Length: 355
Image 1: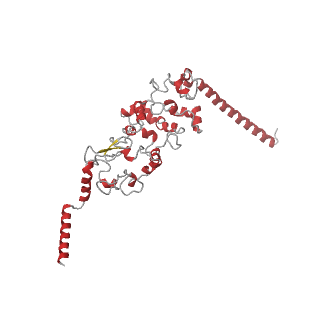
Image 2: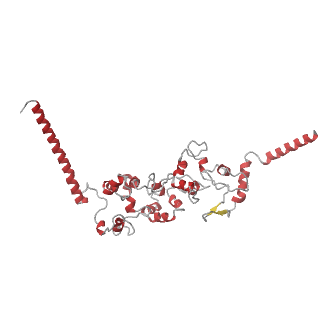
Image 3: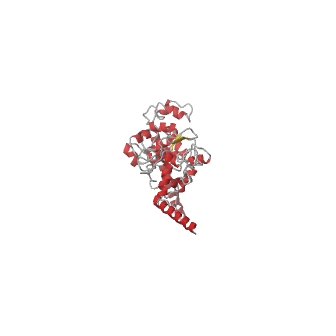
């Protein structure tokens, strides 16, 4: 009986000491302290299968100022059950919190779920270890809201973020008219996500893609068809309408994927002003550009205006031919109307017996 009482006293004493040493909330601090035994060393990193080096340095300050500032290590790395790790921790799954209807305080959106149907999500599903996950674009510990200038996916920085994988494309974009405008701080300039989308990025051969052959003109028109945007820079908006009225535009609207669209002539990521000698629509380069579809294209292809508005006299003979057929059609319709009216009048007179 005395032994049992002694054991009970010792147990109570240990619990009391434990309560003093480890008050409520201490477990989270201890977990962080244990994590930083390794991750708190600035030189802590590992080499990935693709040869790249991943920095594994993280401290209590890593989350300060981020959207996850109030989270702990275990909120995201919930598969880690012991330290040191006997098994390699899995990559963080953001969909654990980021889904529509979540109660974690994350945005109420299914955008992260839409990712799995994107070109990146499908690459992951095929086992491509180089394909990007959420943290490869948004960052890991220091994630900021997309509208924040310092965010990896802000309009200003997203091209560089995409360029971590798309190196050559990023190099082309930086020297393009869009990239140069972005570097100058022009907020209307398009970045990668402005044309390709964000979580729902599809390959250019996928009919769901915003840059699919039959969708390119509509995508470009979101800016180039906007008077409010183009008016700021003195750029005409008629190009979109004139393209749609052209042979190329009509064929494109009927579903042709091989007929020329905006990108076929102006380029994709390397778009430059027509006055630039490197531009694909510079007069000196037009024969080569047109020659991609029209073998044997000569310098005459560069003569005249590219986007022709048949309603303006500047279009030359096209204006007069269009005007001729317009008035011919109107005149023919008027003659037919008069003819029908006279015919009906004559029939009515005959029905009344008048001669």
